[in-house]
Length: 360
Image (tube, rainbow, N blue to C red; front, top):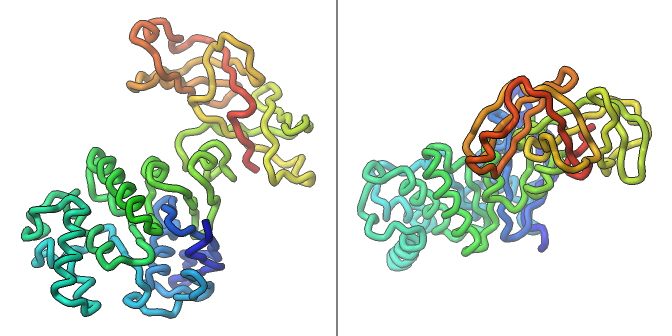
């Protein structure tokens, strides 16, 4: 797949605050690409720069080979879904969806056909005469999505479109959004601070912090091979273990940590001059075994300080050489729950070298 949207060295400031700092990335045609990061990291500002609602000081915004940075928003052929939905309260569903077509001077007959087709497409048939206050949150979200899509844009931009919905409806609506996106094969750039949501909808994700891109990758690699400590901690729960480099072993490194030696994969960008720098190992809670029946490459001993039953798993909090690790044991039957280790027990821990990653 060829790159369709290309952002080259984009920077946007508000006074002395740099909101987007020299960001570059590309999006393939038909791809669902997500900006993920905490509040204030620059993801919405970056999206608004692409839409034309904010003007970047430097850099390029290319659609195909055309730089659209100086083109007005109305001429960019981009659909934008706002976080607040931004529906006109006095207009009906039909009129809200038709608004963009009317602004483009499309004929009345064509507007009616396109709007009714879109109403049916997003599952709002029979509601075209209602006003926003007569709709549920999920229905309002679908109206906003239909309004962005009805103009048949080259690109769809969505700014935290599910943040105003309750947890159950968010799950339902993200399924709807991905189905619609795939059916239309429309290039989509999505903003969220919710890691679970980003993983559910995205082909690739760019994690941001302080206006800077930290890592761009498919969800599985972000989870298993985070580029740095920020990504490791932001993407789900993890255990960060600090240690020192000891030696190399083929494609692995040996590091000293928690009173023992741990074998970990050599990171692709590991440099010889960094050999004496502190290393940080990330290993997910579900990848550490408690009292494993088999031998693991990496073994530790610790004392359980807390056990929490959380439905699908038990969370064990375990002190190992002054560091508290969290371990999640999943898939237990009701009978197995009664024979699990308890608070105060000394346990053995084990994890494979290939399930962890070094962040420098």
